[in-house]
Length: 86
Image 1 (cartoon, rainbow, N blue to C red):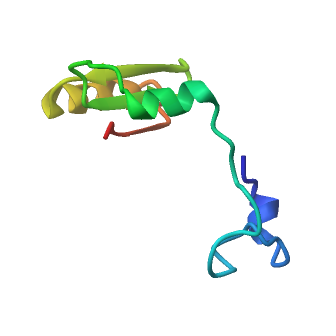
Image 2: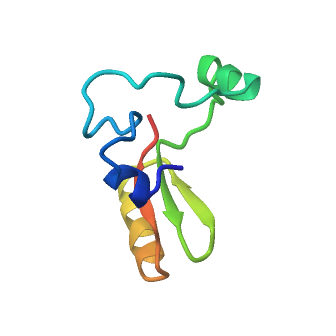
């Protein structure tokens, strides 16, 4: 995980906000399960998700309207973030 101190370090070559181009080495190494999931994603009816921060859970929705309701529920509970699953 990238920290604020690393972002603020002008000498950090992995800080692509300050240094143009690619970093000098790999920034992650996905495992075989992650590669398999990317090649063959699960067939589910859900397109949206919202992460509820304090509860450390996710709500998945098939429609945008369901998603907006889930976002409001999570915001009321200190939710962390949300977005479409692509």
